Length: 128
Image (cartoon, rainbow, N blue to C red):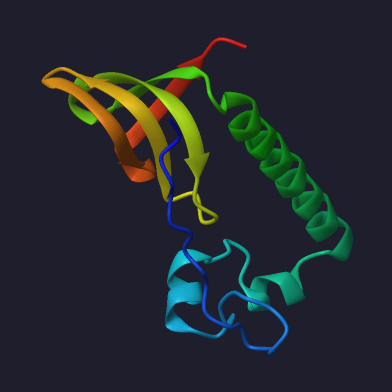
């Protein structure tokens, strides 16, 4: 039998029609920093900037496709301190800060449902 899961609703965004966060809010600035500052972007060659943005979009798309293909598959997570755990991948939050997994097999036991912090993960592998 399926277990009901509560849904987290984001607060209203800066415009009244959307949900999300104001790009000027401290949370957005802390979580969504860009490596290209506005000053550097204004001084950068427009063609070079376009190439870098294209490369970023290609990498982002391939990462999101990877997350999508991991859904409901056994994934091995390689973590700090040489810890290896295995779980069935469920989902990632929108900021890719946490992975939701099921049947997490750790060195000390099995956890039915869990969240794995992405900053604790060095790499992960799964069969396609």
